[in-house]
Image 1 (tube, rainbow, N blue to C red):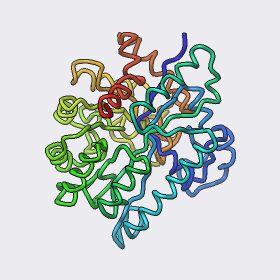
Image 2 (image 1 turned 135 degrees about the vertical axis):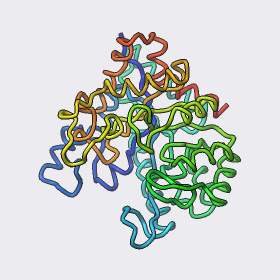
Image 3 (image 1 turned 30 degrees about the vertical axis):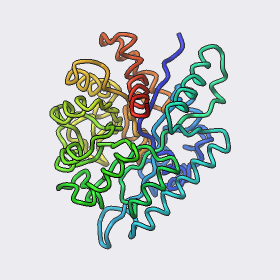
Length: 362
């Protein structure tokens, strides 16, 4: 049986390429070998993502990010000291995506027609198409909107292919308050959401603090998803969604991509001492979060995968049964073993996000 097509709703591909200096055309083993002895980042030598591994795991489509945070002078959070610098950083990331398109590794998906062409392209692998050479489709997203200097920059970014925006990341932001911060979106945030709605840009609710989350849903009437978020009922932290938030997202037709970062899968993770092995972190906890979203929704139409693999963590802080992103193919069997039907498994693997985009772009 051909493994299901997987849609991963959150991968920081350009960040890995430009900030970690990883050539994703190499195999995961080659990337790890090149980083032996490096200590500048805790995940050196522990990466899980490459184009080869994505193809082997039939991760044929993803939401790929641009990311650059603006921080004020003296902030303990890493970032850029002007919005213009942040914008320039995202432009460099865009240039990398374009270079990978020219190299035949990626293909941009920005409308319903391109989505369907790409789905058919990858479905041909089931009839013998050499998927190891197939371009990987990506929907371009901006994680944290700080780099949007003015609303004219948002319109320019849309013309460049941007299709989803998360207004905040960690800490305080220009347009909203993110993880570990508090407060609403303010007039700048409301103006951003109105322009996103006009352009039909998807609102990514991930990372919004509670106040900004509820205010954003009240202001924004366009399509909403959560690219990479887990459940507060399982791991209590503001980074996770409460059941009330999940219900509100379901009511808006959203899909929630469950994330693989270990500290969001088990309670009381201690950086530097906790490991996936000593805390028993496996794909079982990922399946727990998928199941919880499904139980809150009352169906399997609102859960998906947003792995965030190599989002500043690797095997040292991911499920112990994930060596590379190709191991996402272990998840369908886990769901089937819990009683999920073949249709449910296909929907969680890719169908729910594909349907969402068809609807948003119709």
